[in-house]
Length: 390
Image 1 (cartoon, rainbow, N blue to C red):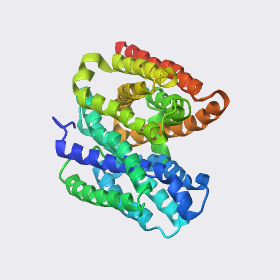
Image 2: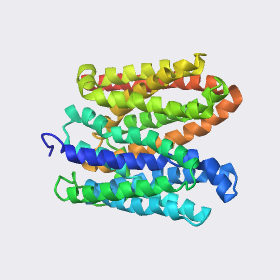
Image 3: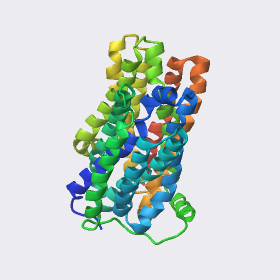
């Protein structure tokens, strides 16, 4: 049963949890050179702290989704925050690189459920007509967390004790998890589904009409857009001559585009509707990424990166709200499948874009991304409009 309005306090708490989860994902990015020096290892080995988090994060979502359906989404999220606090603190006190890898894997596993189960809970308690605006508001935490995590890692890399961001994030997880745990027994925990094997639950979701369309789109979005966008900083540095700190900071502009969309989503979505919003988002993405690739003036980069972020969240938020409605009786499993395939798509996209960049350069790689997102996004928009006419 839907609430007349989802509890604002719970939405804020879930957004704060998403902030910590997203920050944990990105905090290690700028620390790789420091890790390589401190532990006497190569940069490729240091990057395993990012890879192991990402791989475990993606895989564990498939387990955590059905777990939330069975035991209550808020309760599982609150528990995950507590485990994340321990795992994140373990990163700060790890005595060796091997133990740091184990701690990062544990953090990836515990953080995996926070964002997808939060989205699923919003789907449980919010009518579909108003859900997109509520989801956009919740995602402010994730959007800001990605930028803050990267920034914390950058500051830590230049400080005497680089582990301090992990202590701060662990404390954040403790506070949010404790308050959310108390709230979980006062607010609706979300729809509870009968038990069953996680794989059987996922197969049940996949057999639901309309699900393949949404999950295939988000997988392709990850491949053709998010993968190549990982090379924007490299492109601005090597082709446009931007200093690496400046080039890396352009991700803040991408996040700013997402923040602007989230802030105005409640007004924009009812006016445009899902199909026009996703179509316009696709067009904004394509034009912005082409601008990143070919506009020679470096001063245009913040604007084009902002446009890429705005367009991406216009499209992706529409996909997210569809994901929350794909399988209402298995909403946690459905959103977890959606998130896992999006994450897998990004991993595939980074690998493909890396090879493409070596072969034809970053400019043409970004151009290929801009062109490829058009049939993906427009196809989703058109198919959605056709389904609503039936």
